[in-house]
Length: 211
Image (cartoon, rainbow, N blue to C red; front, side, top):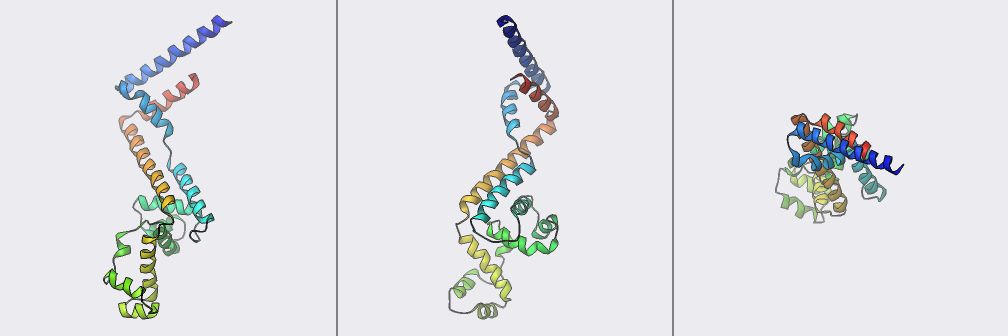
């Protein structure tokens, strides 16, 4: 019985070596076979990344750091959409309702996902900040600046969130997740371009059975 088990172990080892040699022949790069195998096993797809961000968003909402009608998964979609270069209307459309664009914009600013347009004011920023620190009402300030009270509130919201550090620990975690996404896209893209992705998946499946 012991002899039989030993023989089976040897055969499995030989088969594993044969599979590794096969992958080496396909890739032509023996030095990256094992590292690539480890990296490929940790890559996450977009859905998994959105789920991870949604969990962070749930923490933020549950602790009452800000209120929004958007759900955690919708906020995760917002984050991914922002990093993919979509504007607020496009993100709202992806969420199923273009009318949510203002809601998206406020949530985006709360998460410090700023756009250049957020700071493009028709007056010096210092002027507005000084007026906001005065005893004047929002109506008086908006009249002096020549903008509507709602626009003034939007600019004030941007400045307040830029200074607020409450969410910074959460936002750092989200940033890390998005950096992982960039690595994922880079790695999987490279595999696809080299024509190795399918071969790698098949080889890993075989190796997993032998481990």
